[in-house]
Length: 114
Image 1 (cartoon, rainbow, N blue to C red):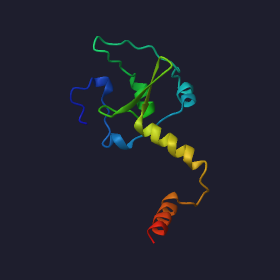
Image 2 (image 1 turned 135 degrees about the vertical axis):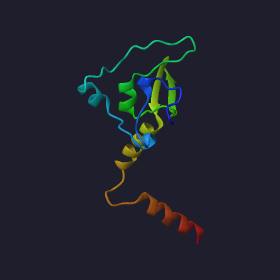
Image 3 (image 1 turned 90 degrees about the horizontal axis):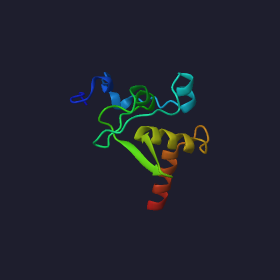
């Protein structure tokens, strides 16, 4: 993660880059002046370069894995951390404040074991 072999515009100077997640919504990115769509070129090796501002907004840093999904002849790229955060937000809607899913799971396992 030291940035070896990474172009200068892709280097991130943060001591713990894997812990920094911004994951801005599309609305937040558009308010910041970022367009919803960006045109990029495909290299002769089939690589595309995600613009630095987009990577930063999505919390994607050099060396991290992303999820690539193919749907309706389109390519969708998302960060693993962003997908986890989205899943947590979705689940949180159905959990009452003060409830602990971990405590419920432990109680269920203990009940099943006895």
